[in-house]
Image (cartoon, rainbow, N blue to C red; front, side):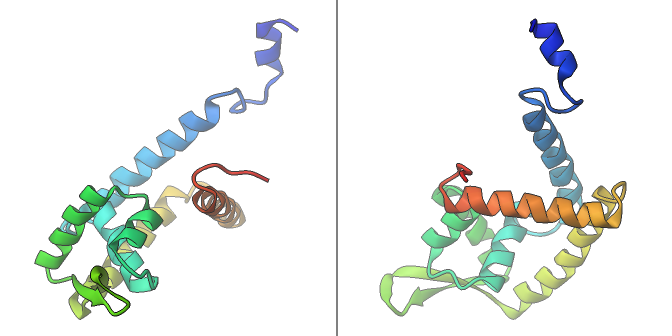
Amino acid sequence: MTTNALLDSLTPGTAPGDLGWALGTLAGCYQSRTEAALSGVPGGLRGFQVLSAVARLDLPNQQALGAHLGIDRTVLTYLIDALVEAGEVMRVPDPADRRARKVVATPAGLERLESSERRVAAEEEALLSTLHEAEAREFRSLLHRLAGLAHQSGRSVTA
């Protein structure tokens, strides 16, 4: 089969590399929409993700927080510093290891998270609005499953 015949036999969007283009395009669109919706949140989208993780997950320390979010520890320190300065999180000693710090949301941070989640939800709904409701649910479910597998296995999804 010639190269042109091979390409002609592919369903649109299934050529090698098309997935990367589609994911990159969608991620860029998502980021620009949510950054606009999160203006005023220290650290923008990444700050929102830090605030959400510390409010919803029981991560033992900053290292675990960074690993969960895939954020370099230097960048994470700046994000946490900005959230601390805004009064939305605080660092507390880990009872099991006084050298480690756990990041916890403050009441102001929880309020910010609630209002931010409403804005992010509206942007996500708008982004997926061209899909039927069942398609949007399935897309979210499949994407979340793949991301979870990639996260658990150190960034490579395997069977």
